[in-house]
Amino acid sequence: MKFFVISDTHGELDKVYEIYKTLTGIDAIIHLGDFVKDAEELKKTLGIDVISVKGNMDNSFSTAAFKIVDTECGKLYLAHGHMENVKLNAQNFL
Image (cartoon, rainbow, N blue to C red; front, side):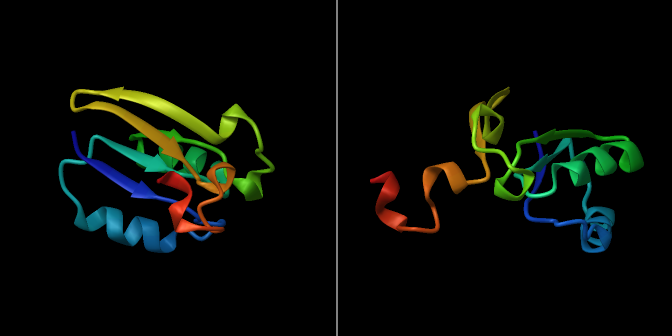
């Protein structure tokens, strides 16, 4: 499977469309939050599967902030990162 992974689009999709046009064989877009409505717009406009989670700017501080997705390569943990405090300290995962 081939994914196009993006996040923090904040309503600015022009660059996403520009990059997407250069890619081939994309099975799905993964949108990792902040402006989950952009994920819905991408799905509608491009007609491709878009898997998304909510970010802190989507006012998500619950289980909507992550997903576990089964793929042919195994399970993927999808998160924006704000619930995992990724900006506070890179050592949080050790």
